[in-house]
Length: 236
Image (cartoon, rainbow, N blue to C red; front, side):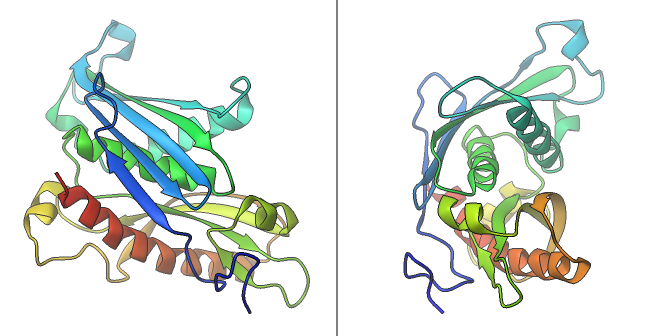
């Protein structure tokens, strides 16, 4: 069964990634999926401005999430925490003790799946800033349609998410060595289904079986995004 935009239930919208857009940032990337787009910038690693932000053993990560319009609220703060936890899992923070890495994500447009888009933009910007990473983090959004015959929809639009019984965002971590080694090995792939669930955020009503199905369907979508990320990371 086709969706309103002609996609199949397990199909991702057209993905684009542009890096190095901001000259004053150490790294930047704009990640676009369909009508949703986020621009992420990275500053650092730089000396921590205050002792409160300094860790003697590792770099400190700070994330700022800016909505397309309006003030920052509780939802944006929740997004900041999830993006920070996800990025902390891939950054080799012990290589830069007593420093600060700041990631700022600006929502450019939002037609569904904005948190997943923001996570992918942040990861691409870290690559552009040459921050040492152990691997890449790939995130997807999912929606469970309402009703007994409701389908799982990968990368839902805003309209699909609004009509769904439940929606979720899932970030997955490939179990690999550092991304610099993976990018240099042109014949290797970071995809292949070996993805570990890293973080998740859901809302709505789901049975335990529906949640497990959503996690597995998201894993398959993230696997395809991980392969795209690897290709984008190789581009100069």
